[in-house]
Length: 383
Ligand SMILES: Cc1cc2nc3c(=O)[nH]c(=O)nc-3n(C[C@H](O)[C@H](O)[C@H](O)COP(=O)(O)O)c2cc1C
Image (cartoon, rainbow, N blue to C red; front, side, top):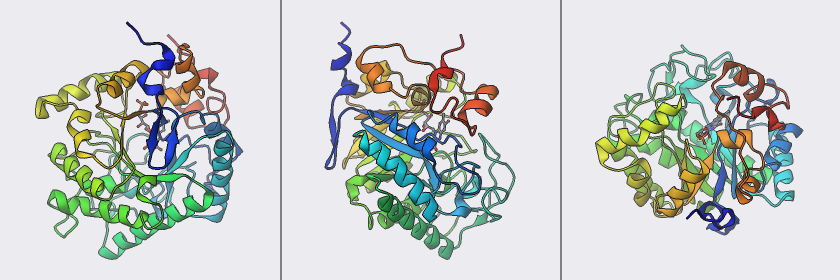
């Protein structure tokens, strides 16, 4: 028998360190390109967007660049200038006023950054291997292989960004280790070709991440820090020869640091339903387990947030089966600001089945306008 809406697993409360989360519905990071291209600071529109989602157990913000050179997108809302900190403060205050909890996703784009968008800097990466575009990323610039000094600088910038986030009032931070950005570029051997202590073995490739987390832990207590990964995702031409070994190790090491959560994007790409259906099959053929079945047992210090392609039903199942503690939603939170209330009341959800429609992308997902951002009615399913 179907459970009553209010008794669903996804609506049960849970604790993240000393934070009480009233439900297990998480707003996944959603970069929507609404910031001014010069200031790259959040505005009142951002405050409205995030506070409209304050009933979620946890909000994770869009990716926020820790330094200008690491920015890959026009319209990002970053965290290295005073104006940006003040802009985020308004967002945080608006969410807190409505009783919500909000973590800033701190991010460096690595080789996905582009001189046309990052103040003219040659992008940095683990190795001089160019990205072949993807999403809103410009293709083509061969990145500079980060020197040991560059590595230290990026890690210090992550720490500074965490401090700026704290100053803005954020409850914590999520370090962006997914989707082909700089941390991912060190982790996965499809890009990382280094022969020093940051390349080669799984332990060496994880070093950049683990040192970065330790820097951030000098600012926030461990349970206020999470990391996002995408072990299988080929977005930004990423790959790894043995994701099961890599991410098992990474999660074990992060557990030793006692961090609060990991968020794991499961799919191959963001392109289609096909990938969502294929994702578990691919992984199971190699490991006999789904991504979450394989990885969750390795993370013992906090909460496991599963992501990508979930419906409310499959999210409930993942939690009920013990394979996840929470579920984060991207597309569904673009289309439904009041997602939690809709789940509670068993209401129909707006669909975002048209997320790849170029018209929707240009006009609503990444435009400068409130349309499709703080007014989600435009996302009613087209079919
Ligand atoms: C418009 C849009 C913007 C996104 N921006 C980010 C981002 O800034 N950081 C990030 O980690 N993921 C980002 N993602 C990915 C989502 O957080 C999420 O991982 C992905 O949409 C899969 O979840 P879903 O199937 O529930 O949508 C974005 C996705 C969309 C649709």
